[in-house]
Image 1 (cartoon, one colour):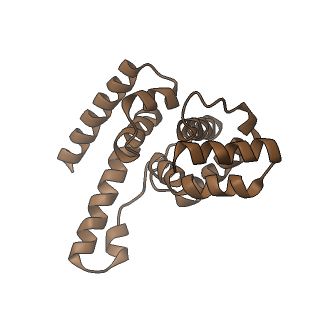
Image 2: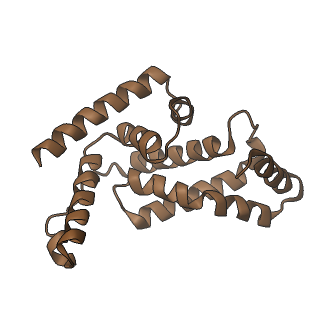
Length: 179
């Protein structure tokens, strides 16, 4: 979505409480926000949907606080990251996948089983990262956000983001080599 169109929709939301305009913003960003959460939650679709919904609700309620200094997507991802962090603090849960036997239960061709197994292995490797490392990897590699934007979303210095990326790559490489 173009920045000018984005700002026009935000203005309509703020000045006229235009819910259709906000609906257009949701449509533009919902798939990327949901994908962001799917990666952070190690594939938990229900939790990802809940966190996505909470993110958009908070964005709508706080839209008047959007100053336009950062892009709308950066602001939205920051809200999403805060929602995820709050969820983790609140539940103190370990999100290690119990993927043993899933491939054999799914059936299908060997090619699809191999792809599913590779996907589950990567998800398991991601689940072994800390929440911060997983978020950095997701934003940088999967959401293709530039380093500066990742730092802004996560409210971390760029050097710290680089350190988290380096540690995450090392941990994932070690895990994937051993499996």
